[in-house]
Image (cartoon, rainbow, N blue to C red; front, side, top):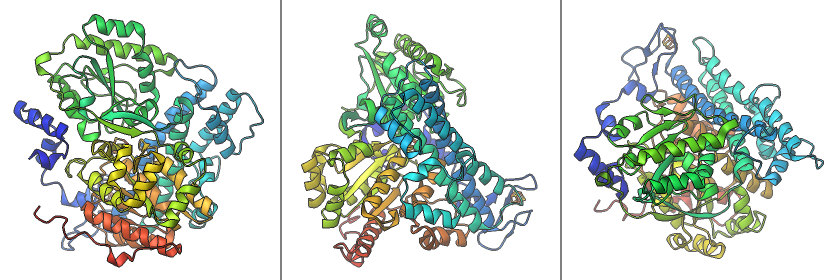
Length: 638
Ligand code: BF8
Ligand code: SF4
């Protein structure tokens, strides 16, 4: 049973405890929802107005139109458009939160923040066409913040980071009318278009869906990533550890969960405060141990080497170790259930974002003007909870595993000697056949991490470099794919390159907003070769996606020219036209499509064939795609 829920030993141990103690988790709640609504699964239900709710019968027997007259194509496209808008909004609002603190930091009005990477700040200013001229860094920062704030509105005809994309791609977006104009604007316009009686043409809605997603990838997410680098440091390769074994039985354990590094960064500072360390020791603890969860965890792992307790489906299980004093949450992907699970233990759930409150949690409102003070207050609250820990209830499964992170674009290019040339040469020679971004979530509909780990394994053993973000990164860390010794798991070509550079075959590029790093890297490769991104032997995959943000990511990756395979079926199958457009038609529009393949073995085949097709088109040595198939041994005896 537990194996069908997760491939990881630490999760399986905690699931046994959950079962024995009758604690509900995401898996029980998924079972309780069965059967899930077939109309919703196919995308043909609509509740956009109070003439409804409506549904269209996908089998042609019942109603074919909603009360307003919308057909399946319109309803499916509208639903998908709103999903993209919600995902883009989540990333972009996160970006805005960072941007506002960045501006206040530039003005010297915050506590606990600084401009750490001046060189990156000046480079970003240049990207935005701002004159540098050796001006004081605070002035450059203020001007950049103003330019980015304008990007959120509609005072320009395209967002500043679009300048990073290859010119040929920008021209294509202009021709198609999908250049992102303003970050907020595209999301607002999507909400408008999908109101009853506005945009009823599924193609037109979906093209705007691509524009909305581009305002995320080349807009809000990129703002979040790049300014986080400026304020908290641009990641460089760093070793850390992963899994529930990162918790320490003798220490005050604090898990930092969510997505925005603003508060968690000051908590890292606060946890080193000698007074607080002494307070913890006075309570009988050996020290204060911080661990990460989800993407806040990735932000801290990338820049500070903070150990990673787990990805999305571990958030309830980490509380069940009985060793967690506090789970500090900001926003996104935090299950409302964590406060219920926490009631069974001594764990404090501390919410920190005024826009994300959790019934049952203690709310300590984040304020950048008092960042460090609030960080200390939170750490103190956790230390106090240590007194209530029940030692007999502590169950920390196994030992932590080593994991390397920190592969920003700057770090990757740095490892290559400052230019993409060695990577391009390795791709040209066929030592590395291509590169794939394996990204996205966990979803309880799939055994936890199985999709990520299986797909990644098949890709690296076939000499395909894998870059990872989000929960996919954590999955690969737990699988042992992210240490330099994992070069031995790669094919001979990729393995040799990794050994020469001392890097793993799977590179951790960060959190989900850091998928923007993958765009920057793809643009750098395309620009170096003088081609479009869609010409490169690249692909994306989201084997276990669940969130609206993942839909936005998939859409901007495809709109940027990269074929992307989804492992979980999106709710579009009620419209054959929409499916055909996304799976085939987009090829002639943006030079890339979506694939949908739940079996990671087959997804690996689709991706390998695609990469060899791209190699063939570039005139590089290629393997005949027809000869690539799932090995006969796979699945035998299973
Ligand atoms: O932004 S991968 S489950 S944690 S949505 Fe969430 Fe998905 Fe994890 Fe990070 Ni991304
Ligand atoms: Fe029904 Fe149309 Fe209203 Fe949707 S917008 S609920 S399809 S009437």
